[in-house]
Length: 115
Length: 108
Image 1 (cartoon, rainbow over the protein chains, first blue to last red):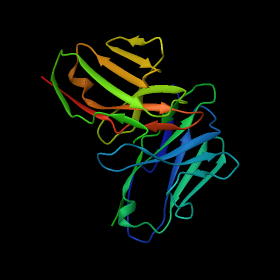
Image 2 (image 1 turned 120 degrees about the vertical axis):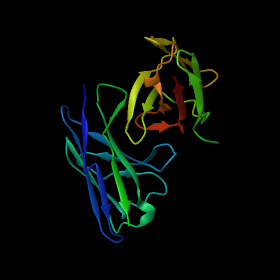
Image 3 (image 1 turned 180 degrees about the vertical axis):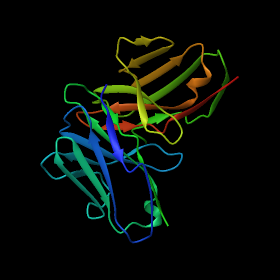
């Protein structure tokens, strides 16, 4: 089956630092990947849609200069949380859409804690 | 109004019981419908797609009523391993919108 990986699985950082999260599709090419954020006891909220070779599309209320997305290849998208603050602490999950199927497969998520 | 609404629960039921989850969605142009399962501190995993004709996968039955914009999931003969949060998910042309999830605990 389709597999999506994320790295790192968890990260703890100091306030003001930047954190990069990688999302890879392991056995298929994903022209579109998605980045979600989930706070405790809340549902997944879409942050942005990452398109290979073009700029990401951000959802309303998501700062594009704070959450930098790069989708340089068909198997890799990265999310960089710049100048992280404690309120950015959350569970970040990526997903990839298989063109031939009308659904998304999720990575295992990255738990970010900003001190 | 939320785009996808679910009863947040929690539902606590004994092993072997039948459980029903309901979900409504507001966008009549929605094209695809799913139930995902999410275990604590894990990513969501696709449980099943939902079709207008209804579909069944073992103990799980999903129904879609487009006219009422209503989706359901029925779990029969529930197992301890069914304990999780169940997410109703509605898709447009490209994006997925998640309900807040219904937490289910199966008790021995």
